[in-house]
Image (cartoon, rainbow, N blue to C red):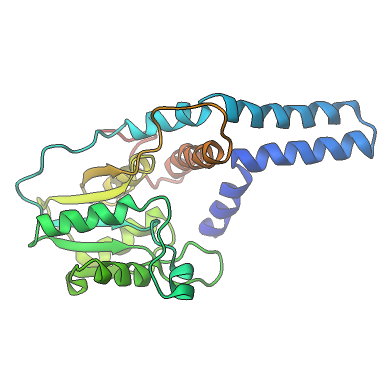
Length: 258
């Protein structure tokens, strides 16, 4: 039930969804019911979209998340395991076209391959089931095809196929590999997602070395909307997710940090 509610909440709270809803409701109230406030609601939605296009709103929300855990520059001398969270490979497009299809979180898998080659004795885990409400193919299967194409020994990789969200990523992966106290595990995920992911892994008793990738905040140029709205949706999803997971007792802190 939590998974279904979380999916619906994520969609309903996306800034793009909220602003479009304001415009549609405002137009209906103004044109059909002749309510003066409808016009103000519509204008509020329009001005919100303009602000997203003309101001670095997405950077304002994304930067604190991405800067929470610094990028790793000094390679650790010992690595017992490397786990990467799903979200980079589109399993349905991969199956449809017969070749791996990557999304905008591709740095997760490329970094995973790089580190897997640098630490040949490390245990490897890819954690990713299906994030769809109904049906869908496990992302781990598509990822296995990608890793094989990139020349990585798929037999080294533990493929976790059951998880549907970040909390289940941690729980299901921990069940499969049973990390021992004192082991040094690297966790790879997008920089914006790292605070929530680290909080969850700590909560289930799995200390990890955060390895953030796929940064979205930085130099900004006005005039766009699609990219800014996409990044804003991701950032708002993470902020709301941090609050919800903290209230649900699924993370060790409201805003986990180093």
